[in-house]
Length: 370
Image (cartoon, rainbow, N blue to C red; front, top):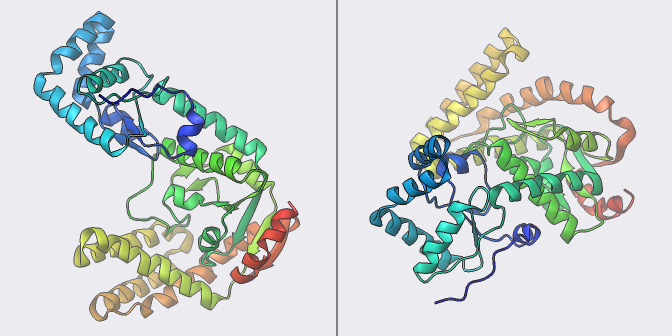
């Protein structure tokens, strides 16, 4: 039998080292929020959890525990242990957890030990890990210096964020490009998952790049439906700005790549060529529809006609050129006026203006001034 590693409450090391985690909570709990490297291998399915919970409320803990063992038939136990053993073999450095590090964790650990695969648990479980990340995100806001990368829609801010190592990609964590057309395949994480991802990313910056400011893309409070905390947003609004500037031609090219080519590729990789195109097409149509009131009836109809023609040309001829006038019109006529109004409020905070190459070359020097 493999020697048992000790249980842990060293939450910092778990997240800094990207430790694989086995979440034995029920699927309904996992779906509400967990951690980036957690795999859901539940000891109870949703129905069993509900039944045992009712028994606990009505008859008490001892009765609920007895019912749990009744539901854990030999077949059920064998299935659960087989899944856990596979995880243990694939991730010998990992840990398991339930909600509070109580009954479910200890039963899982006992069954694994009986099968010859002892595995350590996380003291305090999910609740302690979540509390740790909430507290650490507050510390990150207090301790980290921010630099904000701003610029008009389509200037390639996310590309530059990826080019500069001292950065955190907020849109990547939210799986959304931030604009009305920003939805991406796979949907967005839950709010809890987004907060956990952000806290871990900021935690790593504090520990691995101590003392260096973190570069963040300028975002509103909401990135799609994922919300930044008021404290995080307030810190961003008080921080110095680097302004990314690109020509309208370059911005249209970036928009064409990200919102057309990349989006279509994501959908077709999952659904296949034809069905993927249908999902892609519907996504663009829905995005335009969401801003119809701000566009006004006449302009919405005009842009809708351009989009329909572009989609037809794309599908039947394989050409994406028909999207160019749509993208340019949205950038110049819709996004730029909103951005220019917002920029007026930020003039005193601008450190530097330039294109991607200029900012990339100057960034180390700029970061030293903050």
